[in-house]
Structures are given as structure tokens and as C-alpha cells.
Image 1 (spheres, rainbow, N blue to C red):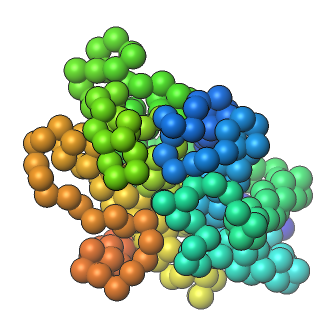
Image 2: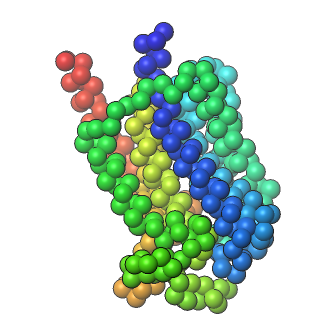
Length: 311
């Protein structure tokens, strides 16, 4: 039994992801509650009601998007029929975040439709607690090797590029931190239609930060992926994690490009918005890149398994 349990995904990476998203959710709530709506982006409610509403939107997007991957790992970890049924239902609820109109950049106030993805994410949290109570954290993979170094390097680049968004999440402009104003655009007023006083990096939450969080989650959860053995679950989750990584990187790049290059005047070329799936060359490239990463990782994993088998 112990050997069988040791072969299942551990929860260390899952708990780390939940902790990260929980921290950001609190930041989103506090910032949206205390920062005037004129300094935020496309929100109209303020105070604790506005903060809670913006946090609910965050729990739906991007948290529910990441929760689907966590649910797959929990199904593999627990291997119970009722868990599969509950997780499938929760995944469907989480997927409602992709339904047109549920999350709109033009209106980031909470709406009743946001509750479905929020419930799905909460079910994923509940299943995580159940798995932790039943078997503890489980296998903890030691850090090391080329893949972990590559994960760490990419995560470091993402976090450095996200400094203005991290500060904006807590209601602070990068220019208010000594030394950062020379590196990042932040408080310069650059009006947009409907936002005459909009600054380069508005206060509050950014979809570039969402992209960073999704990419970081993909990097973390991919460490637990090696323990997934199901014939259907393994390729499906492998592609989903690859899609999470590419999608997250694409959205982080798009927002950074707009705020730090286009608004600075370095270039006039804009990367199209990539938050919502659509039939476009940009989204075709995202899917193609995810497939490439998925098959490359599968090939490397197959070779490693054969080598370990021979050894």
C-alpha cells in the first residue's frame, strides 16, 4: 500500500499553487476595496462590496482555469470513483469561466455567472483538503536537475517582469518605489477611450498578472505530473499544462509589451489581446506551441522512463 501511495502525485506543488492564488486573491480584495474606482480598471463598485466582487472574478479567472489541472491531479492521487464524479462536475463549473460574457475586460464587476466557476474552484480546494487529511502531503520531489533549473529561471524572469503588476495589486505605483520608476512605466497618464485619467499601469489587478500566475502554476504542477499514469489522464493533463504555460506566457507578454514598450513609444506594434479563445492566427500559434511542448516533454519522459527501466 505504501509503495502504491508513493507512486501517486504529491500535494506539495498543489498546496504551493493554492497558497499563491490565495495570497493574490486577498491582495485583489484589499486593493479593490480601498483604491478609488477611478484609479482601477473597468470596475464601478468600491469598498468591501467592490473588493469582494473583484476577488470573486479573480477566483473565476484565472483561478478556476488552474483548478481544472489540480482536479486532475487529485483524481490521480485519490483514485476513487466518487472523487472522479465530483471532480468532473467541479471541472465543468470551472470551465464556465470561458463562456462568453462571464468574464469581460470591459466590465470586471462581479455578476451571478461568476459564482459557478467560484464554486468549482472551492470544490477543488475541498478535495485538496480531503486528500491532505487522507494521506498527507505525499511524495515531495527533491529540487534539482535541468528541468527544475529551467523552471526556476523562467519563473524568475516572469516575476521580474511582473513587478509593476505585483505592486499595482496592492495599490502601489512602481514609480513610488525608489529605483523602479526608471525601469518601469507606471504612473504616467496615458488616456484611453472612456478612461481620460488612465495611467500606464493602472492600480489593481492586471491580466498580465493573471498570465504570470497561470504560467507559474503550470511550472509548479508539472513537477507532480510525472506520477500521473492514467492512459487518458496523462496525455490530457500533459497537454492542458502545456496550454496553461503557453497561454500564461502569451498574456503576460502581451500586457508587458503594451504597458512597457508601446506606451513608452518604443514600438507602435501591438500584440492582440489573447485572454479569450478565438479563431485567429495568434490563438492558432498558442495551441501549436502547446502541442509542441507537450509532445517534446512526452518524448523526453519516454526516453527517461526507458533509461530508468534499463537501470
